[in-house]
Length: 262
Image 1 (spheres, rainbow, N blue to C red):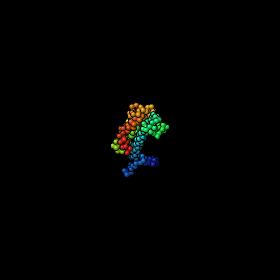
Image 2: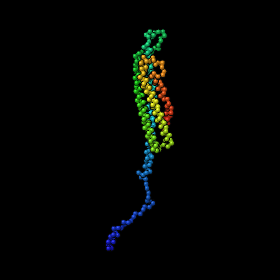
Image 3: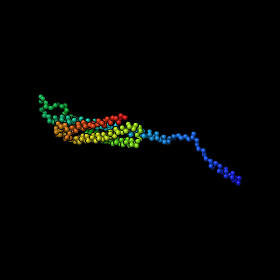
């Protein structure tokens, strides 16, 4: 019995023992790579980076809109000049066509002598008409580019507004960021309105290019003295479009310069 008791005591030795709790000096916690503090810093840095990326993308689309609009303004100016030149060539051709053979030898000629003959005028007319068609083609492409750029501005603005609603914009102070977002919203609204106005103006340029008086001598005299474009006078339409192209752009210009200057 003594041996059996000793055996049980040996087998059960230490079964009920417990490990003493650690002292306060040994309770130390260190923030590893996956701790909540480091994750919060990473999220904050990521939010800052995303905010800057979206804002710079918005600036890029706005710069493209500005550059495209300046190119379109140059196209309108070229079309206006070409139509004035075509009108002058038609006038010279009309003078040569109606000139009497004996008028050249009069003491006081009834016309202004020109070194250009009819063949020269035809070559100049063909060249200017070809350039006119190229300007119209380039204008169509630029108008399409301007519309696509406007869509891009809207997409970037949607991303920016979504980030602002989710309170992810933290690279700028809250007040300055909200003010800049308000400016961007106003810019998008005004630019959309101006895009529609430019589309209407350029469409009138395209419609007037089909007017028979643009290159038809028979219709030339009918619109020579007219300064309005009620009948589709190509020269009058081009001048009106060139005059109205930048009308109402004062506020838009100021806002664009402020946003691009950041």
